[in-house]
Image 1: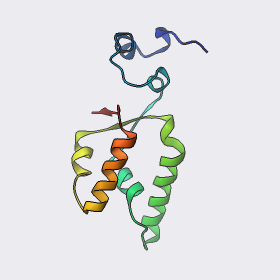
Image 2 (image 1 turned 45 degrees about the horizontal axis):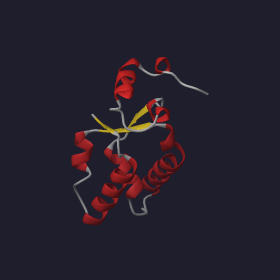
Image 3 (image 1 turned 135 degrees about the horizontal axis):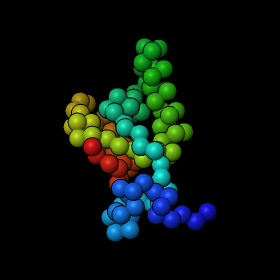
Length: 108
């Protein structure tokens, strides 16, 4: 299916034509999902003995594996800063997630 600029949001159309939008037209058409610190923490966390925490870990990981590609992922500067805190191993895992999946993501 061919797409024209009129199929895009107006604010993205000018940027796309000017070549300043990273990614593809398909990514420009995705709805945005704001990812907060807890999501990144849960998907990079070690297993938990607490059943509620483990449920949240599993749910977050399942969403990440099955749903993330359907969205343009968005994070804030606050999330960026929060992901730098804590256990060094967990910080490294969160940074790896950030660099792998948020390249070109909007930071609001």
